[in-house]
Image (cartoon, rainbow, N blue to C red; front, top):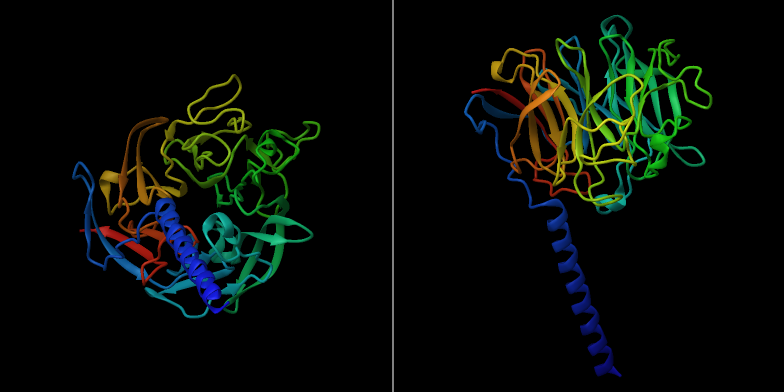
Length: 401
């Protein structure tokens, strides 16, 4: 019996070792190798040499930073997916968060496909933040089911107080929750929502999923929203037919709203199909009826499509002075693509695209333009799908060489 038990133990050990090796191989295949985690001072040049960036590390040791916002008094707010709002003040990450949102439902342990994409997501400051202190947060929560909520808070006494629901009961899921939020030039709050892994919701005007929503700052409905009075339609809906948009910004000069959106990437359709869209009042962006470069009457196809997938997340138009060659370019932080995507535009037309920082720092979640024209990038290697360097997750700053 002793020999038999030893043989069995040996078989179990070999199987366990083989499983561990297979798991490690799967991780490498799906997530790529560990990023270099280069130190401050690295210089990166665009392909045609028109821009040179020097990379600085602003903060380290974060846990899945999702959104970056610049406060009028010089501070920087950052959301972390476990539910924290962190603060960088005078260039230093403060040890205590501004707030911890207790209602946030966080991802569980394991790989990304298991742990999911829930938690504290988008953030927006009220256009009059300096006067009223209002900050808006989007997060996943549980209430007899999984949902997404956008709530307004007021900063007071070094914390966030007076929570007020702006919109809630948006169906949530482990994947495809959106949820980027921003105030537009019209002073309205725009919210991107995912389909919650049920594509049919995106085509249903009775659902808040797979949409761009548009609300007043107090959560009321603007009277010029496109589907007010449409039987069965939610009045919050601005556009529909989206799968999972995680980035939005307005083009300087034209005021056009651009969004980055995740394509099916092999999960619920052919691989790839990531999109850049110009999002306009009442339009249908096709998901799940069309995707990739498909066309259909009454549905909008993307102005740019990416196969293989890049997993585009936060995006911003560059309108600063530090990098003149970037003026008017749309910059998109990409997760699976592990790059900063540069989209050069002529109005509505894409002139060319370029992938910067390809694989240098791993998964990039957000990009934002600071008041001085420098660029801040949130690294997202601790989200269950990356290979964190010892200093991850980080906030990087790009300045002219």
